[in-house]
Image (cartoon, rainbow, N blue to C red):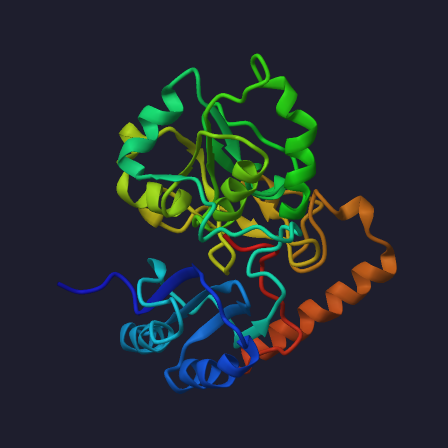
Length: 317
């Protein structure tokens, strides 16, 4: 059996305790670079999160290294493939949180909600007594979500706690919340979101194990409740059922995902503007973006990496 493509992508995260993340970073970065692996990994005292890509052997070598880190032997990892390398370089960054929510004291290891497998997810969200919440950001929800899910319309995951506290009264009955089912791209944001709801006194909290990516991988399209495509934080931009690469592009100016219709708009200029940001940018900004795009194209023509190129992504998971 042959692989469909030569580049393997691994999206991974693990909430665990790293007493000194800075001490972990050098060997982890070296393992990635030595094995030709690129992408971004975030390290914090609460654990590790990120997406990496490379050859089959290179990815396994890096994952073997990560599994030796404290609490990472069973790290949550989702695999997919791409025709080309979706990242320009390898970064290992130190952060306060591996997914930013801004709620000190939350413990996703101990206070997390109940996992629901992709195979059992349909039955849960089909129940009319279940409140289904999409915990992702507005630009992600805009290209796809589960039928009937509530869209918080939040620009950042950091806004989720304020949104929930403002709206929970809409769903409470006799002072109690019904059961809540939440989902995100790969599962990590829901680890914190469910821990937050439990901390807020919500008793029945569920989340999709492995996130949307696991659902799209395991549930046949004819049985699916998913509508649209799923935004991902690399050069693929979006994926469909079976984790096939989707139809969306990306605006390099504002980082918004672009539909095929957006890409045909007169307001779309590669690297410069799109329908979402055209009116929000000055002529000077557009000139600067155009020069950046020119330098990127020159670097690609020479087979080099343009150091100013930025990857999509705001809050992984």
